[in-house]
Image (cartoon, rainbow, N blue to C red):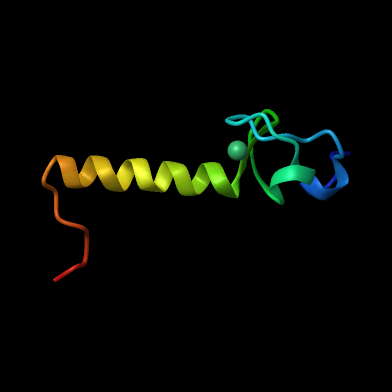
Amino acid sequence: MPEANTNQSRPDAYCSFCRRNHRDVGPLAEGPDQVYICYECIRLCGQLIEDERVRRGHALPASR
Ligand SMILES: [Zn+2]
């Protein structure tokens, strides 16, 4: 029987992107196969996507 997945119960969980432990970076979003991402990396990804969108000249959705 699989247990409920909460990263707080996994002291060794770390961000798959920056490799920092959740104790250093806070709560991690969990993906399949023990993949985690921290808030810092989520924010960074959001910025990259935002920058790329601007670079391509795409308007932000629902900005009209
Ligand atoms: Zn991270």
